[in-house]
Image (cartoon, rainbow, N blue to C red; front, side, top):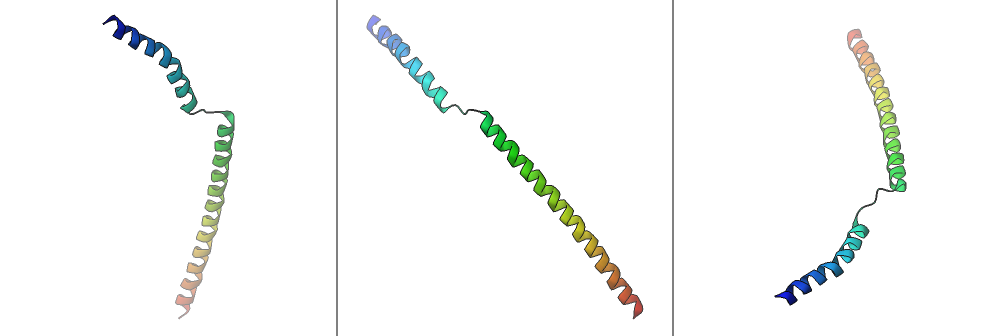
Length: 77
């Protein structure tokens, strides 16, 4: 019985630091490089979104203009 307890305790003492080291290696790290890259990507996406909104506004103006022209053309007939 004592031998079994000694073997289990020895295994825990030996394996615990190895398991801890393995856990530290596979734990994701939030280093500043990743944060900077995410921030840059976010800024790019926001810039693209703003450009798309401007283009959509321009298209709406063109549609309104075209509708007015068509309405004038229909009134003339």
